[in-house]
Image (cartoon, rainbow, N blue to C red; front, side):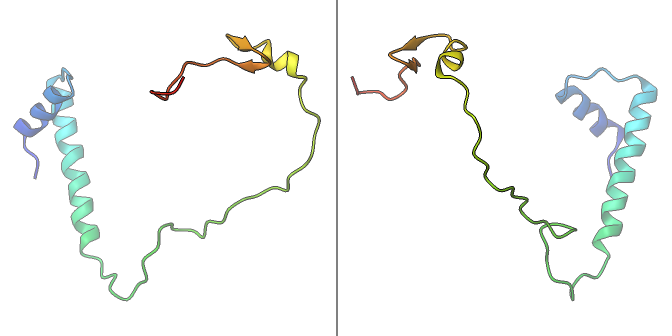
Length: 97
């Protein structure tokens, strides 16, 4: 069970200034949340197989379709720095020249 001091400690850690009404509201809500969790822990799920999703989830794929590409000049015009037909980016691998 969460007490008033614990709500105030969490508010302090989150750098929140709470009014007395907000403290009481959070106290009631957090304890209600924990009570719901305790109720769920009482449910017997021993005969059930574990799942990662409540519903069957499949990968949604679309077929590849060949389309018209943008012109290279138009694409390169959007880059901050271009050199020899490529975007120039900062080096991120050390030791290579």
